[in-house]
Every structure is written in C-alpha cells, then in structure tokens.
Image (cartoon, rainbow, N blue to C red; front, side, top):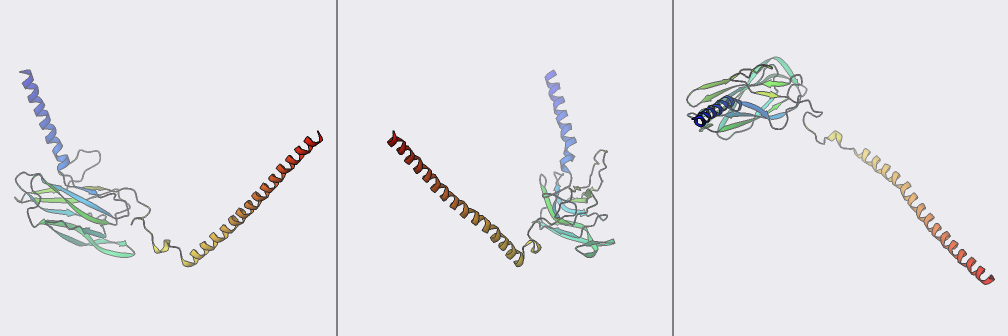
Length: 248
C-alpha cells in the first residue's frame, strides 16, 4: 500500500516538474550564430517550436526594435517558407557607413507554403542583422506565432530583471562587448605594404645582412689563425721535449 502511494506521489511530482519546465524550452527564442557584439554584424536564429499536438505552425511575425533600428536586415531563405520584409520610416534618421538612413526594417514575416512546423518539431529562421547598437546590452524582438487552426500565440511580454519570467516572454538577444573590428578581421589595401615600403624593407634587410656576413668571415679567419697557433705551440712543445731528452 505504502509502495503504491509512493509510486503515485512520485508520478505526480514528475508530471508537475515536466509541466512547469515545459514553457522553458517551448518559447520562441533568438540566439546568435557565434557572437552578437555591440556595433557589429551577426547572424541570429529565431527558434520556433510547435507547442500543439493537433496543429502546425504556419506563420511567424517578428517585430524589430524601433528604439534601436537596424540598417541591415536580411533573412536567409528557408525551404518551405516565404519571407516578407517590412520597412518603415524612422522618426529619427540614423547614420550608417557615412549615410543617413531614413527607414529600417520593422518586421519580418515568414509564411509556410507547405505543411509548416508540424507537431513535435521546431524550425530555425536565420537573419543577418546589423549594425548592432553600441549603447544597449540587449534587443527585444516581439513575435507572433500562428497555427493552422487559426490559434495565435503572442510572444510579446518583455522579461523584467528580478521578476519571474512572464507566461509569453518575447525573444531577447543578449549583446556582447564591442570588438576592435566590427566587421571582422582581414587584410585590407591599407594593410598591404607599398612598393617603396617593400624596397626600403629589402634594403634594410640587405644592410642588416652585410654585418652578419662580415662577422662570419672574421670568425672563420680567427678560427684558422687559432688552429695554426695551436699547431705551432704543439710543435714547439714536442721539440722542447726532445731537446731535454738529448741533453739528459
């Protein structure tokens, strides 16, 4: 009797843990492929799980932050989905690459042209974004998920620090510290030495090599002289020894 009660209690506890933990991995989330550094560019993935067992996800709408508009937003083609990019005029223009940007992407909508995300599956929607703001630690993207049965789930609640996670949290992209080169490292024309610089470097190398050759030659001469002197010393010692033997 006690064993059956313990088993039942254990099953209830496991079920409770599963129910409570399910939302933690069932949210629509955003994660960078690599890093998302302040002031730089990154590819981010919007991960969309299907939470229903009787319907497929057929549409995803992601709103981009207007308080930190991004001058470049390019979705990667996803098989079975059509992407639509919506731009809007900015209240305050931003500057990028020396140009004034008066409009930016405010929404990207993916619509399934097939079965969509079926029950038990998830889908990633990659997007290239930039330049990321330098005066923010995170970006919030509000998302709306639509199912084949017309059910709509709004992932738009902004998580607040020090508070419990909301029921339908919005995807949040954490930004890392700015890198020295926002566009990545690489050799540029300004990094390549000019012909004059190359010639000067070659002359400097040649001049530096000359003393080394002279020093090497001098060392060889001194070595030969040392050998001759040593041989003479040995010969003198042998002759001196013979003289002592003869005198004795």
